[in-house]
Amino acid sequence: MSASLRLLRRALTSRPVPRPCRRLLSQGSASRQHLDALVKKDKVVVFMKGTPAQPMCGFSNAVVQILRMHGVENYAAYNVLEDQDLRQGIKNYSDWPTIPQVYLNGEFVGGCDILLQMHQNGDLVNELKKLGVRSALLDKDQGEDKKDKK
Ligand SMILES: N[C@@H](CCC(=O)N[C@@H](CS)C(=O)NCC(=O)O)C(=O)O
Ligand code: FES
Image 1 (cartoon, helix red, strand yellow):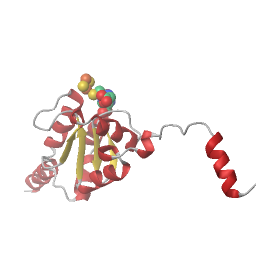
Image 2 (cartoon, helix red, strand yellow):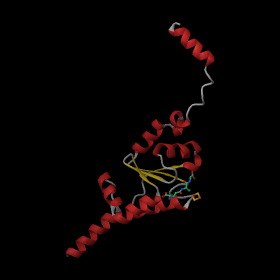
Image 3 (cartoon, helix red, strand yellow):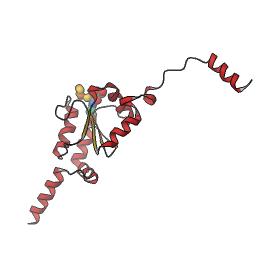
Image 4 (cartoon, protein in one colour):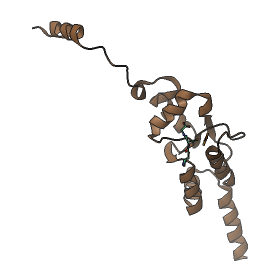
């Protein structure tokens, strides 16, 4: 049987093509390409419920407050409550099941528990420093160091 006949027979006899996997083929706000661009566009990116000015969930609020403690106010925040494709898409993208999600320099860092841990163990100050994002806490520590040395 010729190759083209074989293809034709397969097309006629095969079962219906399954629905495309949304995770791989989703378009628009949930496509991997779009999300890749979003997380890389800004040094600090947060996917959250609500906005930094009006968080709609305690977990998202915790991330906003931790960043605020570090003097980080000027970051890209995306409200997943306004876009259900984005809400699911970002979970698929990071393979992390919950919101909020924090990205530093295009890298997924974690949700509010991880950010809190990084805040407590000093990793967040260091990461922000590496990114060239000034941390108010770092400034404060250095100010206190200088005072101590006087
Ligand atoms: N322990 C999590 C708390 C976040 C969490 O549990 N988020 C839930 C409730 S807001 C969530 O995103 N559920 C799925 C959804 O709402 O899409 C963290 O560290 O970020
Ligand atoms: S919206 Fe209910 S716990 Fe976040």
